[in-house]
Amino acid sequence: MRYAPRAGLALTPHLHAVREIFDAHNAVIYCPEPRAAGWDLEFSEWAGRDSEERRAAHRKLVRAAPPEAPNFAAYDPFVVEKAQQNRTLTIRDLVALEPAAAGPHRRLWDALDARQEDEVRVLVCRGPRLLAWFGMVRETPFSKGEVRAFHTLVEPLRERLLAEHATRAGRLEQSLIDAVLELVAEPCFVFGAGARIEFANAAALEMLERAEQRACLEALRDAVVRGRRHADFTLTSLAERGCPGYTLAVQTRRNEARASAVGRACRAWNITGVRAAVLERLAAGGSNKEIAVALGTTEVSVERHVTALFRASKTRSRAELLSRLFDLAAPGLART
Image 1: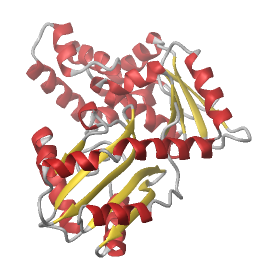
Image 2: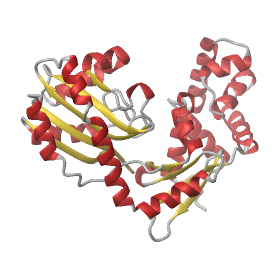
Image 3: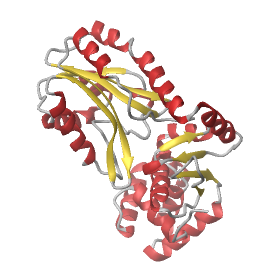
Image 4: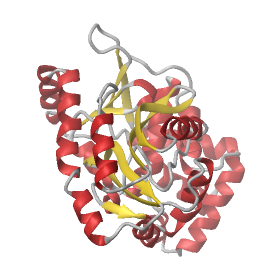
């Protein structure tokens, strides 16, 4: 399944119409794009008051986002959670759904000089993959009726984004790659520039939906970006004409490779006992809850062990820990 649309959507006239219908200050559509050194915008179209200034300020914020843990005002552009996929939400709705969203939104709108404005927005998605952020802002709160009316625009826009994307990718190319990937039973991804997921089979899409697999997926992306091996995926560079910069990642489930990685890490970081068992289950993609059940202990105890593993490995996140773990198991370039 191909994901992201490309630039050149030419939606600005439609944004002006939307802004006028809802008496909004700004109507906006954009999509963040991963780059080798961080983030940028694949496309960004604004209509309304101070649109050029706000677009420039917004792009500056996106470019400053940390590449290892992107969060653009309470959503992950790589894997949008189900509760936010294609749902039209106001600020009030979003904060009720995700209380932690209040801080990022406040910082965002302060930077855009839009402190007193209300917002309604939708993350237009295909499955868990973001196609575009689409929304509008104004000083007066949006009513429930206006939110419902705005939501009627989502499906036509989604179809437009998917159609534009399919046209650019080439329908034959897309159909062929989709068909080939579905022949693979194990999770299979095709990564493009900046380790963006361009294609994925059904098993991989299911993996994207599972929150406990997030750290493993981030470690896989890191391996793709850095050209290194991964204990559970075979990475193949697709550098032939017509697919420049693509990387095929197929899960091999080589438990022996993962066991080797854990063994080397335990020796290098002086890890023994229960902590080694926690590391092994982290490498397999287990959540704290799953690890606690498997080891017959509590989630609080697992959290303490995970924190100790961060200290021992000199890392700050699960993704960073797993990346360093796999580096110990298979250093060097991985492209085959």
